[in-house]
Length: 446
Image (cartoon, rainbow, N blue to C red; front, side, top):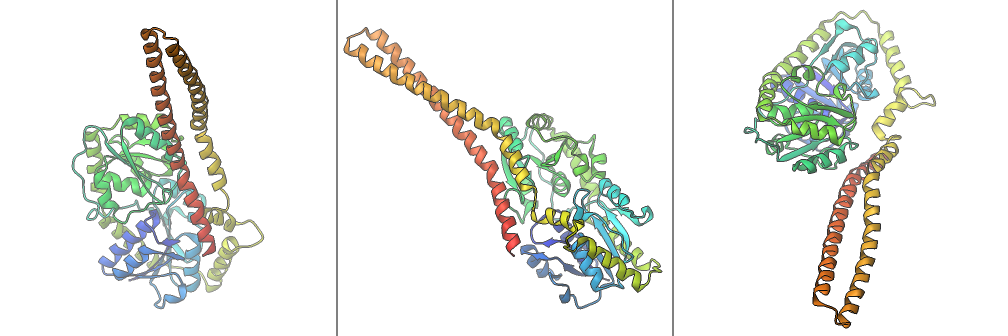
């Protein structure tokens, strides 16, 4: 079977990209031919090509007619169905949040896939027939993601995996207060890893959502489910089955990610419970069933009787173009453009980030003002000390004043040290934002 898979990116190790990689490798391993179409390619495309996959960014490079189209993301899916109007298609919804992931009806699309209950609800709300919709949960390549040794009694090393940044400062503060050394990876941090399966073995507790959280749990890390969109809490044996149905994703993020809630989740770290969670995930997230489910759905789409005419298919394609092609009317294309190119949103995020650091700045300003007063006080005490010395005052009084002066100097040094620490954390939290804005501008110029 020849399967054409579409995705917005085959570049970094983001959520849908990793799903594409796992799916393509699994299909090829089962003896099928894979073709990948994505408007933006990168290092990941080169790695996939080295393993025998055809990966292109132009539809004209797809020469052989596929047997089925596996559409992901509306825009590249539209390109594929327009090029091959007689090929049956399947569409996967990976997010209940983004419009570019939201399904649109088309007679070529004969089956839909949701990755969790939230995505299933989104599909149904957009008119997808319930009898042609299946949930296929995200999987993990357990051959790559090996199980780590047993966790320690308390977490020492933490990892933040994120593609948004609004919660970063809260995670940093919570880890600092808990004595946890924190590292960060993901598009919001400007740091990526092509060997996450090896990196995870070094960490005790991971802050993540969705596929990244599932991979961390399968490796054996304790997982706090949170990101910039909200907070769920600590993944435990008590909630793992229900949370799995929600893909450890946005449907669970019911409250803001705060330092208080993070500290509470960290305080519940339990090596025994985490081991039970890991056993569950390693028993349910294997790639074998994931590939079998997709092949079953592909066969079902191919075998389905389609009474639609060529005119009906071309009309549906034209309707898609009306919605997601750039026009004067603010249709779906405008929201998709906002999602993909950050036309709005970063300014709001910047404001929120600066507001979250207001307390730090105000505290620093107070510390500086107090420091100025103390320095002036020390100068007066020094002058008094000189005066007393010249006047041959008692040695006892001079010693007391000197001791008091040294004590104040120590206090001032402590204030300066604390101020430097706060400023460092502030600039660390701002850096990913500006990196993201620079990358967005670069993307606009490509």
